[in-house]
Length: 128
Image (cartoon, rainbow, N blue to C red; front, side):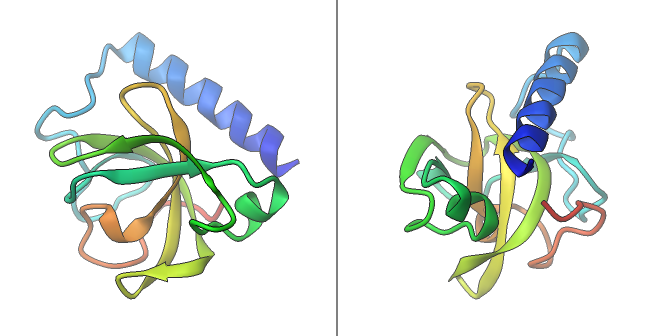
């Protein structure tokens, strides 16, 4: 069920991004203070967007549980954040992982630590 919900969310967001004509990486589109699902900036370089590993990846995201690197993103890129959840691995003291869609059309989990937000938890973004 989790996989089908995520697949539906990815399809919906892909349609939204395509029909709105939005370009990931444009200034002003990020929600720097965390106000729900939407575009957020990535502040680091070479950040992995991960998937694979079956149910363990979806339930307990981490680099070990999500071994397949779909793509990498680097600042000043932005990603569409759908949801967040506590993972099996903490990165930089942040235990949350976010399910994202990149400008290249890849989706997967990335460590929430790399999202440009003032706190570990992004206000208004639902649990995965």
